[in-house]
Length: 212
Ligand code: AMP
Image (cartoon, rainbow, N blue to C red; front, side, top):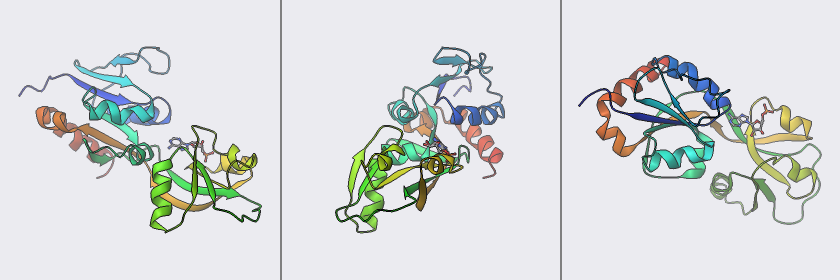
């Protein structure tokens, strides 16, 4: 099979895209336009036929699972929540590293009811407390989880932590690490078979770049 098949790679804007670009450059894949400056969502690259598509982080697994994109780069936090089965996850790219933590107020109030935990990671949080045999009330939020304990909406939050500055600025402290997070390369299962000749060397070069 020819090595010049079209290949769509889904990436989300922000830290993951910024840290992915040097890895892609290592495969001689460079966007022809600066993703930070253009409003285009599909970017041509220096490799004819290989395109980058910029989507929301939580949408990356969906595009890849359904084959709208052949490959994607996405945080393990998103994959844990997505829980889809139609994806290969062949490589830990070791970028955008952080921790998913349970955090709470520095000064704890007495809690005489079931613990309330606010998070956008409801599935991962439910699984985490289930393995501990603890019953908690999980409150779904879509952002700014740090507000929830301040306003009395929840006793704890589950969120990503990098430097810890955001928690600290809001009077919160990390209590338990749920899991370490980094970005993963994901591949559509059909694309892995149909475009194997093209994808396999890319995986091998990426693996060497990230020291695997
Ligand atoms: P920090 O203040 O450095 O601990 O960063 C915490 C904030 O950045 C939180 O709002 C997190 O949701 C977000 N954050 C940190 N690391 C990541 C990451 N690797 N991917 C996505 N969001 C992150």
